[in-house]
Image (cartoon, rainbow, N blue to C red; front, side):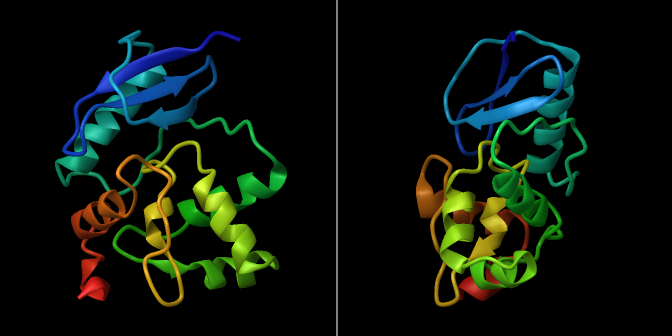
Length: 152
């Protein structure tokens, strides 16, 4: 299956959205090609609106090519409202699995930001972040979403 890329500028550095013919399949911290498919253009526009504080939810088509468990965790992360957070334990209780499994699934999130793994925290700290820049990027995103009050 063909893969297409759309590189976009962001406050976090260059991001590259990767899509197939169905939807977005990954987001990576790097500069990439600019193939300009309709799905990629839509995703790039939505990311720009998010960073400009004009969008809180992403509606671009996403196609996850991972396990059923990973898809379930991604759905749970996507259901966390903008500006709010949950703990790994919260999602573990919701899905009936150990919190460590949630942490591993968050770390394997192929589409950070669009699938907001930054909104998932440890019980006693920030936890990790799968995107480039790690915790610093997670803190930036939480501040951007107005969820940084818990960091003080």
